[in-house]
Image 1 (cartoon, rainbow over the protein chains, first blue to last red):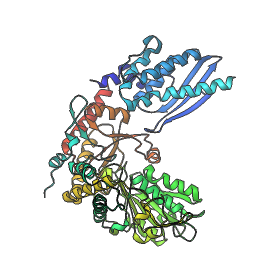
Image 2: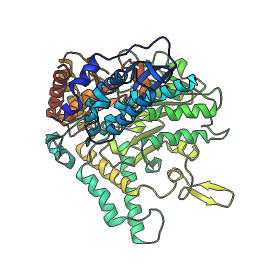
Image 3: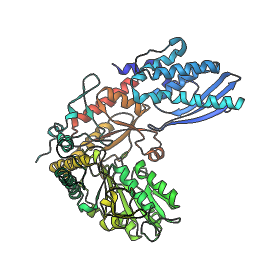
Image 4: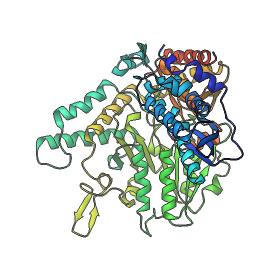
Length: 147
Length: 415
């Protein structure tokens, strides 16, 4: 059924075994983002090493889509150059806006392509983007602190 | 006339459509908005087809017909609430009604009974919808008054044990919901209205979840102001009601000013028309008001007592069915005593959004989230719930579908 496009195995795996879901005691920036329409919340820490994303840790409550998406994000972006992280984030946001017409670049997005089905459910796009918007905010703040 | 939900459902054309791959629509989100019967859709569109003109102005036949239809609708609302027609104000919804009374109080000068100042208090409850919380938060912030509230107990009722200290000589307003949109709890009003009136405070009732579902008699309830939305009572969107006691509306300053609400105007001054016109600036939402009149006439014909009895039976059926499912936690009273047909629950580790999405794939429409009552869900320690809300057109088949859907979701997400 169509619902399987939304709830792919990879998503449920990340939901049940979220990666990096433990806030680090130290960080360059910490942000708290809320999805006011549904009450999902996330706290996310970013630590940089020069221009490299050294650590991303988080804690939060929310649906499987929002939780899996941020878990996938941490797997994907830790260790990447900030410029590359930006390319990946832009590609993911583009995928979310695609209304089901695109599958996503698996070389670039890896597990995050499993979220492609979300783009067919307009009410859920904000769930998938919660962690990504938090990362964007935190990385800008962390960079400003470094400079 | 015997109550037949299947026959009633036939009056609502949307209930004939299918959802996601041809599934029958099971609509269990009437607490958010109700569906509309043909008589309402026809009344609204026929107003545009046959009678449309600006009411209360114009010397032509259409203007007369439009005014008759609009004022006729006001009389229907008044009869429905056991009120006088001049006490009934059309707004664009309950949110506007509640903002109207809060802003109007904020406009009151010293000497007016509604004037608020530092040291005064406004009393609400922890189970309010944002629409009956934030206007009072803001009024308190603007006037320096203190916002206080009744807590919610572990069994999902208002804690009235401190009523005499909470509502005291400084209290000017007590604003509360008749029925919680999250918990389904129906609040007993008698002790609250008695205490409020004892200290000279007015009682504002958010009746969004009660007026569509049970007989509400404003005189018998001994309240002072009431708000509800037409769209939750099988009426159109964009129309709501603000009701107030005649002598209070006479003293309450206006909120929105402009055309139609004046008595006399010069370049520097204006005086107000008597209520209800004082609170209806501009050309009103005439077609929607007429649609609301048709909606309340429809509900009256079926009988509010019958509707309430039907919903209580459905609520009992659903509470029992859900209780048999592992990991279900009902967020609200477990029995039908002083409780209506909004049934919120959580299901183990399955997030409400995921459950709602699964139910949607089965054609079942429910609400998920904090239901615009964030302080309440936070207090209860549940960031979100799933809510099924029933109305006159729902049947036990709908509830069987929901129960099977919940069990299906457990299998689906348990894989």
